[in-house]
Image 1 (cartoon, rainbow, N blue to C red):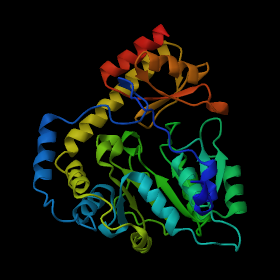
Image 2 (tube, rainbow, N blue to C red; image 1 turned 30 degrees about the vertical axis):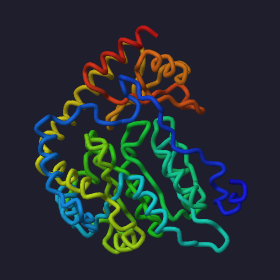
Image 3 (tube, rainbow, N blue to C red; image 1 turned 60 degrees about the horizontal axis):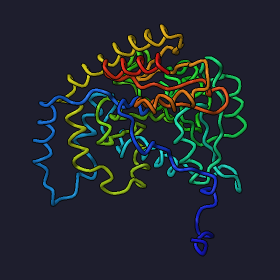
Image 4 (tube, rainbow, N blue to C red; image 1 turned 120 degrees about the horizontal axis):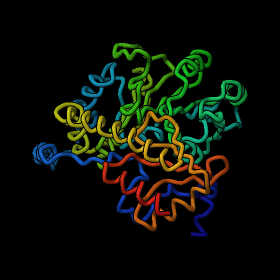
Length: 362
């Protein structure tokens, strides 16, 4: 390895791989997955559809049917959509495409608030970008002054804004985001809507309009992972057609398997009613879980996601460790002002009851 060290990107020396616990806890409430499995009937539909795939052929390189279903669900035209293996691949594609240098000798910059989804920074740094972090306010909202100042000073090529945000669970200020998009036309704003199905504002805009034309510097990320299809890894990004053309130039051929494409089409059509019912179950359990945590003295911030951002009033890493010893996994945060918080995925009624039971014990 030492002989090859000089050909490896030096930025990687300061980056740790994305961490996932080796052994999942029996009560797994740490990954923001959908807690409810598909019904047997839904599984049979998927099996039937997958069985008809011509396995000796490559998948549809343009994911034609899936993109048409995405446009029907989220608005726009199929040509505004690019699909990938979860949102992560699309984040990487956006960073690859938008890496033009504004100032010679200065690497491009990406800007995002903190705390937020860590992959924005990780992927940018692996590509040699400058990562500009702007802390959220004490109410976990965008700080108007600091955000505008950072945009003016660093002139980032990309801005990632997760709304609802993870790990805080809240929608970001739509009016302020719209102002930024208008004020900085030479920056591409990427709004990550992974948790939109659980939000009171479920589409981009108020009121949502499927016919709305996107601003030239706006892209909207989405995924099916949070609504029961995490194993299939289906992500999409909607953007003006001209940008989609550029993204497709760097997208690898056949990047989304035919299995994933077929599952995605089913999720958006024949299985949509079951998935929507599952979302409603999660919303009901979110309310019940928040009440149960409050009864134990834990304050959870209002959530627009499938998880709760909970102040434990103590060192959260130690609490999470003790819970894991009892078979319950939650996500703790050890840095700075996050140290007292845990992120708790909303589980089934039985899983949520087990969490509350173990919290009383520990």
